[in-house]
Length: 126
Image (tube, rainbow, N blue to C red; front, side, top):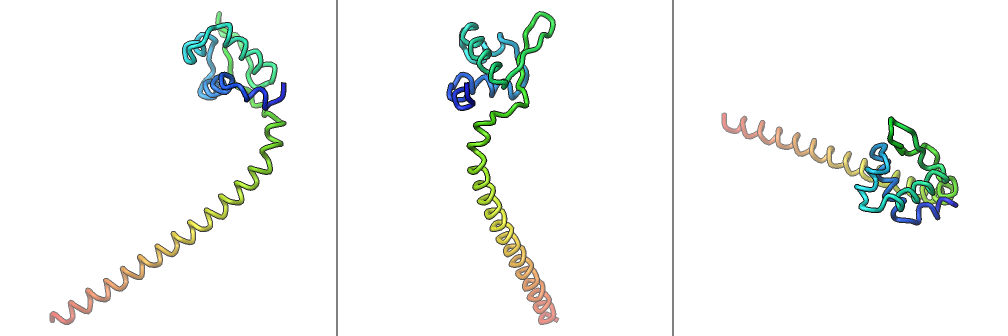
């Protein structure tokens, strides 16, 4: 099953979200999602076969956790979009840096003007 088909199912995405937070056994996933145990097990099998989750035995429990295996077909498809987003985020960062620098310069100029005005007013009072 390709990565898009794996992610197309809302239940599998919800399971991945839960496992992203922490490893969990089937019972915890069942309770968190409010689904039947056979239904959750079916989705976990699909995720395991896709290489997204792995199961380990801890005592009498079978605990599922995320693997570090990416969905290569999804990654490949997203790459040009991610590159585009990065360019836009870089441009936004540069714009915000310029605004921040302009604001700091304006604040420094105001402070200098106020200081000069206060000093001039103090001399006039003498």
